[in-house]
Length: 311
Length: 254
Image 1: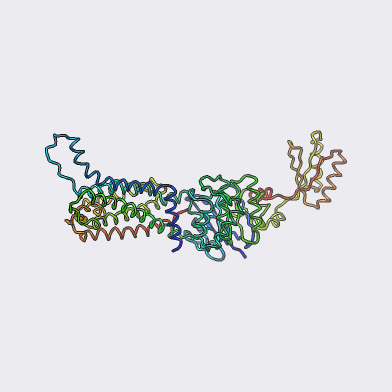
Image 2: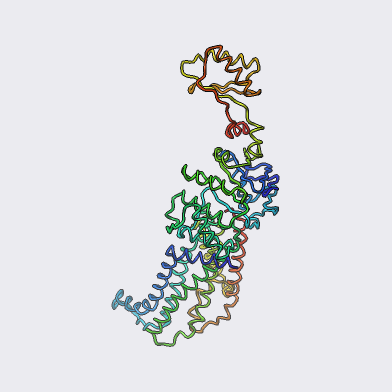
């Protein structure tokens, strides 16, 4: 069952069409990575789901309830972390969370407990400073705390790691991963490594259309090309090597050869069994006395899949 | 209902922490002290300025002069300060994006408008009555005449006009993208009321007369009942402005 259903949604700003007949389903309980380049329409999609923008066409459902622009009731089950969260600078983190707790309708005792827990979770416990003195990273962490304060069923994060330093990013990803099974997380980013690390589903958005939406494993099985990476030392005879690899290509042992000269690296694509291909490849290289420094079976990366999908 | 209380509380905290409340209270306190003082000092100032060249005798100042000064300073400075300070009340929240976290937690946009209107009306009431009571106490102290019998009745129309003005500020701030646009639109609204005032037939219906007839109400030479249409129109316009603010904010991108 899907907690979010986006059905044939289009969105235009003036003459510019940002989303074009978007269909998207986010399975309940999943961590869904929403991937796309800058301007692909990720933030717009999230704002539409939250009722912050009005669709030009199509419907969106959250928890089975239709999202309406302006005052959508579906927001009572959501938590939202924007890319640059804004707060009231004259409040402290605790005061801001208390205000959010009051707005959300948390009971006093529960509110106190949740504020304590979330502040500890994001490392802002005991911080009495006003928000105006916070760094961007601290604001991002407070943003996470406010989004999670009421234990939402659906947590929507728009490029949450973009403002964080490597350590903060790592902590944040661990935090999201720890929430797996407790809530559904829709997480937009253009850092593919982050998605690969914590998400179990991924949607690739390009030019306003969802190119792919499936589990990461399925995606890898569908799109990933089996590849072998070879490294040679600088004295290797590359013209002889190229001739040999072309011969293997003609024999159908390998399908594609990509050479990256500066790093003496050759990437070979194949479509047969790995052991069979690697054996044939090594045999041929030994015969030509061109031994690689290393031979490695490449695991398909989300980055290569992404590039292939948006081509 | 609870959220109206929580959001209004946030508005007062903002006013306190950003020193707006302090500034505005000090300003209106000074206005209150200055009114009777200016009334007392005006004859001396004129005499010093003109010396013996003045052909007429300056009459002794009375409580009427003190109250005249109160209504003049409230309309010429008090209302302008209120407009300047609060013209960005809604546009600031929208442009900075501070409402996003709250609206995505289920806070109704109508709650924001109602809470802000409560805050603005209370702030205006507090400021006006601070200046009013200070003027009243000093006027009683300095002037023992009975030229100003209807002190409370005379201030009521000004209070109602102030409510109209703060709801207009809220509406223009909701429409506009920044405080300057809001200021311009509020100014435009007041200018429009002055233009309508050219037509004598509309005098009893025009809210602006609630700021110009106060001395007559004070003396009892003009009946407040005659200006009931202007008061009712002001209250109706205030409610309309609140409704429009809610409608516009509901359609606004955050």
